[in-house]
Amino acid sequence: MRLQSDKSLLLMVDFQAGLLPVIDGGEQAVNEASWLGGVAELLGVPVWLTEQNPEKLGGTAPKLLASLNDYRLWQKHHFGIMAESDFHEALSASGKTQIVLCGTEAHICVLQTGLGLLEAGYELYWLSEAAASRRPQEAALARERICAGGGVAVSADMVAYEWLYRCDTELFKQAHRQFLKPRSARPVRFF
Image 1 (tube, rainbow, N blue to C red):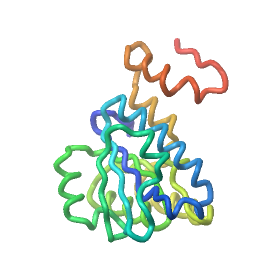
Image 2: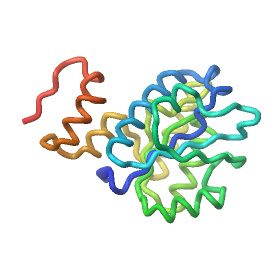
Image 3: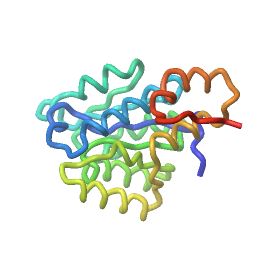
């Protein structure tokens, strides 16, 4: 059940500029996704983004795109991206088995994507702080449903530290300087 960076992929669903203004906690969700996306890039974890009908909902939020250097963008019309055959085939070919999932709206596109991933046999990790909906109770219901179906609720810190695995490496020191230290309100000691 431990996340491993070499087996993981970070999937960000529909953080779109036209949708985010009506999402409860949308800014916080983008901040958490951006932060974990930076950690993922540092560790070589692929970051994939989706956009639902971008002609109507706009593209991915500029703030999120500005925080990322290397990502793959998928456009979709199905609510769950696993119904798009090109995505399904590319994910299978990637060899990644652990999917960290976040996005908007949690109870629609994120949920249906998560259900599709679980049905296909992937380990699913629901990034709780970065899965949001217009109404927070719907985001909570989506999380409950995913967890009841075999997904695991996680925080960005849980994911980052599991990917890092140990504190005595140069990679950890770099991650700590770039990403981890600013998130901590008090010093963290590693023994």
